[in-house]
Image 1 (tube, rainbow, N blue to C red):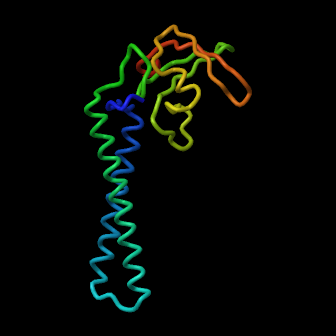
Image 2 (cartoon, rainbow, N blue to C red; image 1 turned 45 degrees about the horizontal axis):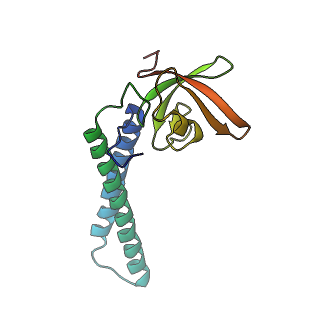
Image 3 (cartoon, one colour; image 1 turned 120 degrees about the horizontal axis):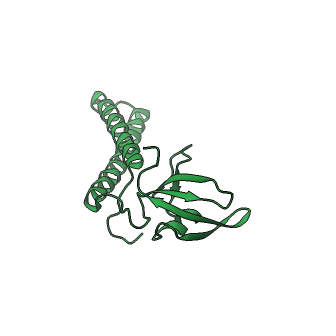
Length: 157
């Protein structure tokens, strides 16, 4: 990652937009509970109110992070199709002849087998490569290789 605004893949954008919507809903609920407790009673009530204020601060920070990331992605434009980078969809061929279409992402989504993070061994090996390039990367079972077949949309899209 260069420090310049990085593109973001469609799937990662949807995930961030959904997280942002969920956080905003949660923030509205928490803020509503603070308004409802205008007359703070005993110390337990005060402690609960402070906990909710802290929760609002955490929600606000995450909302700001996601909003900034989406703004940066918008400024970066679409992922390049000539060289693999964050946000690129790539098709990779492995030595056994199998191919996989993956998206190079900033962060992994739980249970999403189509994402490879830019800081993973395979993700790092693919960054900056062009179709036809062979890459080497480390796995728990030792060194591995793959060939970057194409950059762009999934063949089934």
